[in-house]
Length: 185
Length: 350
Image 1 (cartoon, rainbow over the protein chains, first blue to last red):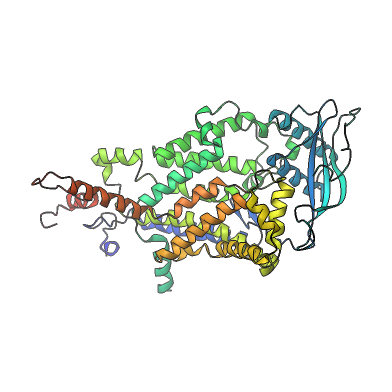
Image 2 (cartoon, chains in turn orange, brown; image 1 turned 60 degrees about the vertical axis):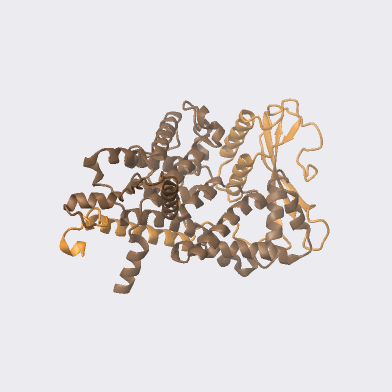
């Protein structure tokens, strides 16, 4: 009634007032439709356009036998002592870089720069008991024990290999961790 | 067409009061602070000189710009630019929180925060925890979020000339809240939809949940921060426990959108909100995926207009109860009524 009477911007006695013009509302409708269609398109097409996404995290079911690559990050002090770096941000970045390494999307120089940056970050955040001069990332291929097959908290290590290694020349690691393994589980 | 149009208008543009939108504004500002400064104890020790230093010091070759940073070829960040963006986002968030110069503050904060959010996602790994905040930031600059619970509202009430610009109910207060809520709910929906599309019902009704819990707690976290409850859950022989956890999570993700679609069914809304809170808390406690922003953003689903009325009603009852015997209780007329009466010149009978 208000719109038909031409008093949309004045409102009624109860304060139910239309604010602004119909142009504003039409603009909002167009914006909503475009945004919604874009969001739905991204979501259903497995796209990624921040802040819209298809949110694919954890969508692949981990069925038995579940074999998974995992990484262990060792920081080495100047004396060759090794420390496991468990910081989640560092591990997350290593996982992201690992995907690019496996897909051959990065040059060795980039991996080296990445490793140096991690060393700086580990030292800046004091993530190890003493400063580190290099890191080594060991990739482990691990199988979780299937249901009913032993202790599920003790997975089997099937294979290990060095993923990133930027130890300074001449540094001699102390202890058993050289290129190994699940020994530091 | 008429029915669809009516449904569309009813969904987005049913006139409401401004309190839910004001609450959404405050919630978004709080989430912005969470992103900018981390924990609350660091709020008053913010170092404006070197925020995000680590990003500026990263090797540019490890920079993989995300989304619009890629579309517009935005180069890797420099320390100067990060400091400026951080300062503007921080000041904008502060203004937004108290509702001072709300619209410009929302614009400044949204632009700078969207840049910072995209920038931190531009190093090879995308963190989906801040996407709902990003969607809310796309809405806020275009809406009247400062019409209630804000310094702007107080100033406007004090200045009669500006009072006319503040309606009591409007469609302009309803669609922004609906848009933010839908953005959040669709995040859950697509997460659930992807699980169904990729793995089918096996995602819920298999050993998936057990293996995922072991992976998250043992292989990713080395049991750091994991509770004994999680160890017990992965060690039990009863597979139905994992089915229950998986199905509960999947159901919540897929049907949480009902909280926006069925707004008149209050009990459904409350149940879905409780399930959403349970899901976010469960992700934190069981899968070691803490996400305070997702938790705080759930506050936009609370019926703040209803709460405002309830509090107002309690206040009036308190006034009546404590009024001196014999003294007349003066009830203040609703502002919109008084205002409309003044505008139209009508009066007396109202």
